Length: 108
Image (cartoon, rainbow, N blue to C red):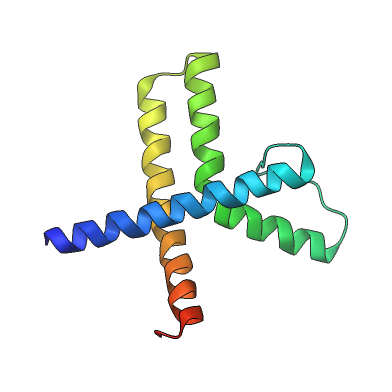
């Protein structure tokens, strides 16, 4: 049981780290932070935006939650709920990233 929790924590951490890397890389390329409402003009742009939002979602949620708590004074429950959503999303995207990395390395 404890090993399963460790693996889940590790995969969730891998998902959140990959979300932070993708979100920061997006911000480096576009000079604006990633958001969920990004206007696109082409099919390739739409696919790229959906991919960025899917993988950088936990980063976007936590950045908005922390800013909302500090700047707007939102209640602590809002931050806890956002953290829970971002954590579960990180676990799902971490499964994808870990599976992709293991497949790329030839272990799967």
